[in-house]
Image (cartoon, rainbow, N blue to C red; front, side, top):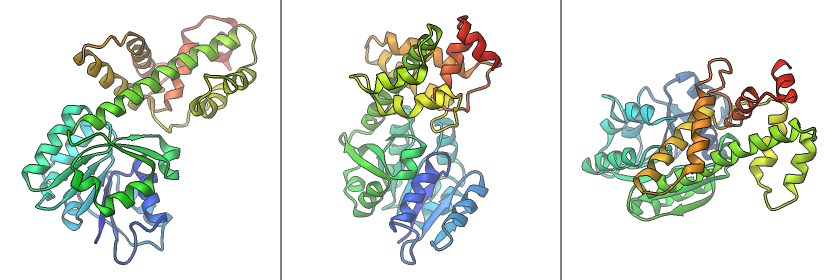
Length: 315
């Protein structure tokens, strides 16, 4: 019984790789059927796993028709909608008994719309957005935040796949949208932390403190986090190779701010961070929207006039 996977971008490539490495898919009996808007990424995955049973499809519909269980990991709400509702898209292949697991970070309304559309055609839908970026995706260390069909969530194939791709799976109930709410809370907190971290690092260096020494101090107290430890040294080196692109982080923060407004929650600190992310994303001089979200650090320096920041801009 084949497993389908739609989307082999920064996250999807690593997730599909986990299914192959762990033997959940890619075997004689359980081929992995894949599709990506850029076909070359499908062929690259085949080349990476030459001994695995990987089949490349010409459309999302073809993937869905050929599988019972299909995972989808697309980058933006616009991309997800286009792939889902195209003439040869995901929805076109849905029939009775198909199980759809969508792992993207979308608006709650997007997830609810897709769930309704799948169920209208006899399928089952589970939203499963993830907490984690490129490294955890490749290492099988994602955190899945699920809601929707219990049938899908309790399916043995789905469970095996989620266990392969992640280190933890949480089920927030049968109401589609709750998984998305959890994801937006997580990502908005992460973005706000990154904005504050960037300013603190910039301030440290501006007042003559060694950045690496301050990272060591951060790591020894209550504010220690894996994100600071991972991103900090790279930020000081201007290394913002994308694990979680700034443009995607900004999108998630905006969705979270909208959710807070709808819930009538004061979200002023996050709103300030969101505005900074937007300005960084849209900066025509820096052109960092496709860099890692840690590149907001470069925007902080650009907008600062300290001697250190001015020197850093030149270097």
